Length: 156
Image 1 (cartoon, rainbow, N blue to C red):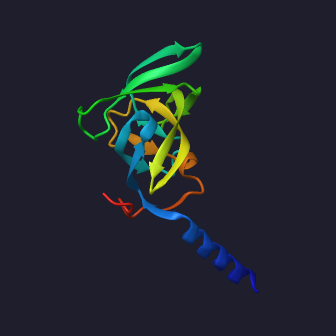
Image 2: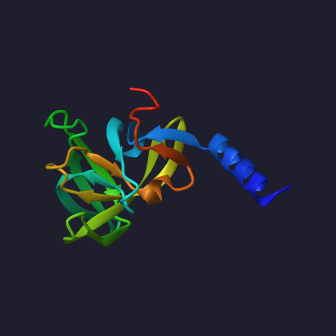
């Protein structure tokens, strides 16, 4: 068997084992009580971020937590969902314009295409951005193939 044939078989098997998604998809963040949010799939971003505002840090039994609000619908202030999560870390993130910002990082499950897995999610003010949720490479690695010319391949 030639190397070329072996590569084609591996590629074909890989495509069958992974789902195909578009550059934007509907997902859920069940632990944050967000049943449906439109996510931008951004392979140019390493980390994932959600639009969070009114962020307040507090402790439960000596463990750092954050409470924050989310507007899950693009370009709308309602509904507003209050969320609570354990702080996993504080990370310095460099935005697309080169500015650095310290952000809270939480770990939360993501539901997408009938699958559920844990992702790292930074809390950021994305009010001026088109999407309330950005899914970066780390959240999607080894799970999906992405067709940048398509949207909502998992349904509306």
